[in-house]
Image (cartoon, rainbow, N blue to C red; front, side, top):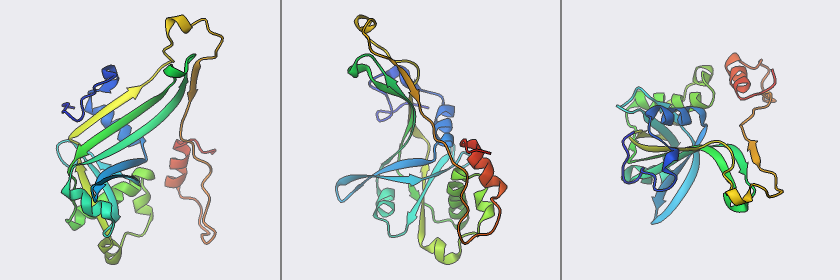
Length: 221
């Protein structure tokens, strides 16, 4: 990834990942992002699901969706937005309060999104979002009809200007603190799924793609 004025790290530069594959890994393993957009002169950050198509555009494309009436969706194509994805991998507990930290992987993406108007790409973008959460899910549902598509907007953001930052490893205590009688270490964190719960009005077995996804997230088999 080519650094820009917005993506160049000014602190802890050794934590920057320069390979584009690192960006794709963070996006692939995440489920939700935060969209930062300015509305009425005020910055607003909104959580949302997303999808990724690495085959669209030279660097890949991130898809977001929302109601056609959503102010964030209306405002976004007229400005540069910021999208972030973060994984919290561990609580880093040091001997001193100052050196407490978090092991993490984060991606920050800048760009002016475009409103998707092509019907085929719009449907593909929505499928990417659904399949990002549960791979194969778009094939196991009714496709959106014309009315539903008319109520939904899809934004496409090129993955051109982005940065990735990570922290791993132990706490970094001051040499003078190493003999202090305080425990230090890392509490690992991860997202874990439970057994899928079938809806009360559904008498079907849990489909394979749902069980596979739950199993990937650590649900009991």
